[in-house]
Image (tube, rainbow, N blue to C red; front, side, top):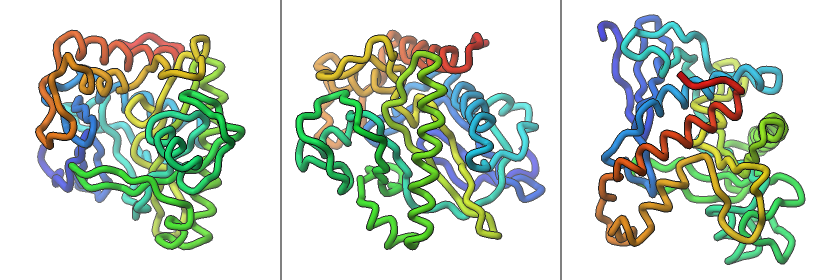
Amino acid sequence: MSGYRHLHSGKVRDLYEAPDGLLLMVASDRISAFDFILPNPIPDKGRILTQLSLWWFERLADVVPNHVVSTDVPEEFAGRAVLCRSLRMYPVECVARGYLAGSGLADYRATGSVCGVSLPPGLVDGSQLPEPVFTPATKAALGEHDENVSYDAVAQTVGELTAERLRALTLEVYGRARDIALDAGLVVADTKFEFGRTPDGQIVLADEVLTPDSSRFWPADEWEPGHPQPSYDKQYVRDWLTSPESGWDRTSGEPPPPLPDEVVDRTRAKYVEAYERLTGTRWS
């Protein structure tokens, strides 16, 4: 790929500098879980993540600008890459939670709060929160684990005014997405965003947005608090890895085993269904 300089590879995405100074962000078919990149790719995953993010960016453009400049990318990356603005990224995962699940549920069970936000007693797995909450996390390096942090920790890192703006934008974007998804029959239980700053100080939504990699999607007509919910995201992979069938001990430090073909196929099907239900269009 003449003229493009490789800058970084993460768990899923590869980043290049384009000849004109823009950044080429390429979504691969890699899938990660428990801070490991798994041996098997999920066919079409990179294209689904990219196309769904573009769909959401269009519907959120009046809430916050995004980093996308063009989808005119080298042919080998067609459909799974975008050219985007170079930003100074904020070192925080901006997480919005409307329902209790995952690490938020674990924090709540231990402390009655999530990231320092006190929640009412008596909530259970899958409970809808009285109102969405901002529960940020650190951005971990490859192979390390994101850690939930308090709002005050974010303010100490980026400054009070910026922290306030990031919280407000996170909750506003989540609110818009929640309503759009509900119209399509899906609950957005939680999601994470990444924001960056332009040279003139504008805050911009970047990376991916509201995909099965970054969000927890549940079928609205099956939502029932008190137990884990069926989902259209990579929770299916996590569940298989922690089941006796996988034979993997998460605490061993050893990498996970390859996914069986059935798990790969069903994971792809879940990503496709999330795309189709949200956008109302067939995946091809």
